[in-house]
Image (tube, rainbow over all chains, first blue to last red; front, top):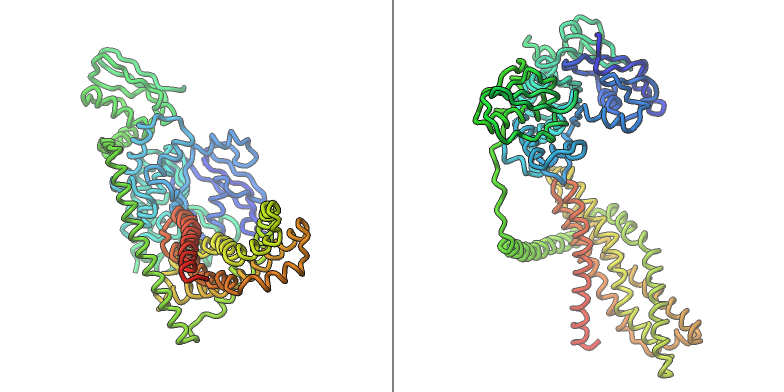
Length: 254
Length: 360
């Protein structure tokens, strides 16, 4: 890969004596949808949090859009942070704000926009993620889980970022809602030229939208590649994951 | 390249530069001139906000065509066009009418709330009576835990506050009574005010601040995490499991706290009377024993369980009213403290009238 937008080198993570990552390398290319998979406790969400600067790794370099995430001045980091959006597992909407205000929040904090323009752009984003108009002024507690995820996604793309990080976007959604969210992610990738870093357990999502898949195992990125390439790898966990009944079903095999 | 350039030539609006969210807010739309086409071939970058700007300009000049965009840019413009929100009319403002409507809602809600609280009190009392008949169903461990949290842990603050209040009452009383040469009556003043009112009222207020808020927060966060629903699904009544042990613990502990508060208040008063007026502690005790009837102590202690019931019921009830979000947890917690202190003082006033009528 010539010009990765995310570049991780030699990453090590330890929680006390517990080593999560050791010598982890990862590249994400521009405009691709990368799915990150791995067993429970392999540090998928931890990796995501480290890349967006919420967690400090023990060692290693992380570069996003050519700029270091660690050891950078607060101003530079703020400018860099503006260029990505994060959607957390539960949507992580601010409970005291309405859906529209949630989507407006990044614009309000990081941009100097006139009020009516901000309202209008937020409304476009809310409609883009497929939420009905009457959801706009509701508090997050009045939304279903799927709608909350969509609203979280709308907030993540509020500033038209170059990269979005999605943590388990389809977990806990019904199959229809999950499929719709998959389609939405791909549509917006095509429309906005997003790079998507996606942590997931959802085999259907991996099949439907991921260009490449990175497997976290044995404290590092065991392999990256398309699902077909990964299927040929001889690794116990990977075989159980992709070759198990659900893995075969997602592929349309008996 | 930064910023957006608009140039009109030969009926064509040429847009160039960075049509992104950072710059769209600064664009001043041209007021005059007729435009038949919008040309985007010079645009370096286009995002959702830029696409909206293009659509907005096109509409302003009478739905003129847009040309020169690359295929992805066109897709984005189309996506935004599909998702343009309908123009919303700002809601009309009728300040006076809204004020009246809000007042009406507030009155109605207060009435309903009083009714609901009474119904909850009934449920709790019924449950406690059931527990008296079947003591085996009582959650003893839970009750003892809450007795420690609401009673034992509150002892230092209750004792300290009462002691200081005794000091204050003695000091204020002595300066006034000295003028009449009636120093000895400071003992009556301290004993009656501490035993009848101050001891129990201050204790109840402290307990309302500590325990009503703790009950609401604990039960409320269980409600938020669906633990209450899980209890119900297991066939357990939240009132039996969560509410009754808390309220019983409070009803048992508040009289004990009240006695400790009385002792501390009298000690503080006696100490101040000794230092300020030279009334020896033995003389202080002697006067209390001979002049102050047991009813003054009884009046304070009779009120204690009632206040405990008020604090416990309000705290638990507000916890069960918490909705799904963090905001309502905070609102219910502060409402629980305010409402329980208010209701305690109202009940105290009712008791004062009652005791005056029956003459004790």
